[in-house]
Image (cartoon, rainbow, N blue to C red; front, side, top):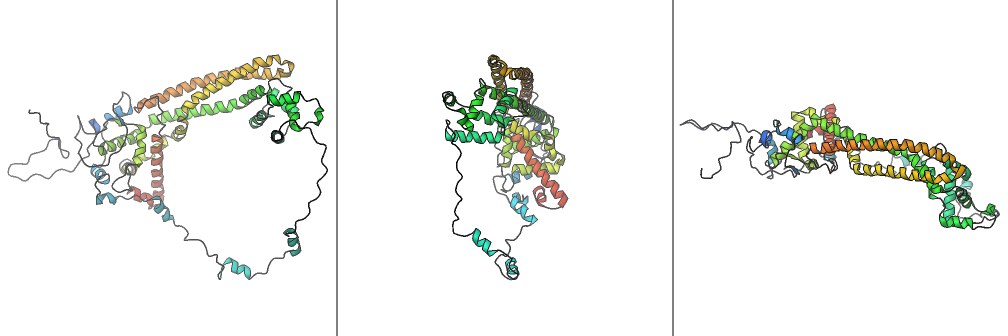
Amino acid sequence: MNGTPPPPLPMHGSRHARAPPHGGARAPPPPPSPPPPSGPLGGGPGGRAVKKSNLKPLHWNKVTRALKGSLWEELQRQCPPDVDVSELENLFSNTPLKEAASIRVTPLKEAASIRGAPSGPGNMCGCQGCFWEGLHRQTPPELDVSERKTMFSNVVLKKPAPRQAHKEKIQLIDQGRATNTENMLTKVKMPPAYMVEAVLAMDDTLLDVDQVENILKFCPTKEEMNQLKNFKGDIEQLGKCEHFFLELMKVPHMEAKLNTFMFKLQFSSQLANFRNCLNIVKSACDEVRKSVKFREVIKRILYLGSTLNQGTSRVGFKLDSLLKLSETRGSNSNMTLMHYLCKLVAAKSPALLDFPEDLVSLEAATKVYIQLRALAEEILAFRSGLKKVKNELEACANDGPLSEGFRKTLQEFISHAEAEVTSATNFYTVVGQSANRLALYFGEDPSRCPFEQGGVCFLAKSSSEHLRLRRADARRHKGPAACLFS
């Protein structure tokens, strides 16, 4: 009545403390029970008060409000998991305790030593019984000493006289540029005239992407074309590079036609890769949303974190906080909160350890999802490329019979490509909406990537590694995993 707050509810035993009978000794306290977070999961209104103790905190990013339909709203209505809070307090106390060293994690180097390793390099000093000592007892091989002296003599042999050079070619193009162009022609392995015919036919059976890209790199510049146009001498005396440039100059807008051919060659593979990326992201969103085991693991992480943080976050946490599990170390420096989580799940709910098997698309989606915004730019690139292709179709209408086959093939390609780009754009919109719903489900901002910090993928990888150790230990009956989960 005077403003003094009521005494806190007892942490152990029944909800109401039982007074000792008159004239009798006080009854011993009942065994401790875990201090859960707010509501059904812990302290605060509707739950027990959280015991104040000196624990190492889990530095997570809090979700302050559980949105309707989110994971955190679901967890608020559920019962707390079965956790031995006294063990958690011993392991993650800021005050070093001897009991904290009772659970030991075998370091990777120590685990590797169980398999055994060679003690060191072999004996190669030539002592008795070694390889070299055995060779010295054998007859030397039969060799032609005179031939060896001739081949490895210090006397330099006279080089044969060079052949008489052919009649010199006239070179108009820079020497380095001409040499690189001739090397490209050697790789393409096609006469320039046939090369031009294949480009005008847009025949992908004769020229592939790499070959067309090489031809594009060595299209003549305006200056080089002017040099060749102003040449008044014998064309037959020009070099291979000059002849190649002259052949390309016979076709109007040859560089634009090569770029159009390149777009056509790459279109199908790039669009297929684009669709594959979207399929991976959509599958990962569906898997994370539907996995009951994953939700149960998140529930236990929320409980452990709220206990360590004295109930300061009773609603939820951001997904990037999952990365903090391996950074939060106990009194025994070998024990992390990730280790303890796996130990707890293995002891109480071992079936949850294989939850990564529900998320088979997650790792690939983590890589793709970081670039999901870049996929939007790829849609714009498809549209921009189609616009340039249409411009080239209009430009080559004045080429005459030379580009007739080119125009016909290009018209067919444009009709097909426009329909494919429209379909891919609609699919991108569907996947984006699915990703936004998943972000809201975890209380995240949809304008950011829910997987961009890699928290979910990190948790899945870590749990998969612990599960692998357990399975290996089950086959050996004893090993490093036994130390980890003992």
